[in-house]
Structure formats: structure tokens, C-alpha cells
Amino acid sequence: MSKRDDLIVKYVADIKEKFGESPNMDLLTKVTIGLGPSIYNLDASKVSGADEKELETVKNNYLIKKLGMSDSPKLMDGIKSVMDKYGSSNKNKHRAVVYYMLCKHFKKESVY
Image (cartoon, rainbow, N blue to C red; front, side):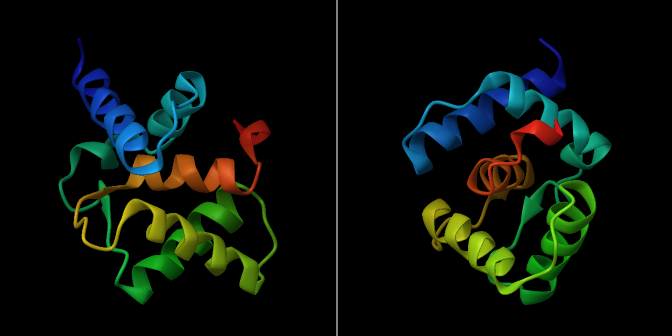
């Protein structure tokens, strides 16, 4: 298995454990590939749910630029909803899992 496959196995476990659902493997793989080399960087591969600046970056770079959504308060509401479900005590929120869950939350699977 490649390093990316190993990471996807971790992401699947997180989605099952934290969100109580089985992921759409095709979508999860596409989201992971879309993140490129950032998934291998310890800092870039995680999202800090407590860092407002980081959440703004997720909103601007992922929801608006990548998914093509219009800026509105519902974007940050969606991000906070995903962060809450992931668990505030969990310090290792994988960016691929967060983006996957946001993609599903906003029903933007068709972008991939």
C-alpha cells in the first residue's frame, strides 16, 4: 500500500468513529488526492478547530474557491457543525476528513 492509502485508512477510521458513518470511498479518495502533498505535512494535514484564522482559511480556500460557494454565514455554521461532530477534545482533525465532511454537508459531491 502507498503512503496515501495508509492515510486514507486512518481517515476512514475517523469518519466511522467520530461521525458514525461509512464513507463514500470514491469521494474520500478524490478529496484526499485534491489536497496534494499537504496530507504528508504534519501541520498542513490537520485543521485546528479552535483557530478562527484557520477556519476562515478553510472557508475561503475550500468552500469558496474549490467548491464554488458564495460567502455567507451558513458557510461558517457548516464548518462549526463539522468541527463539533469531530469533537472539540480531538486535537488531530485530519484536513481530508474535514473537507470530505464539508463536501457532504453542503451536498457538493458533484464538484469532484
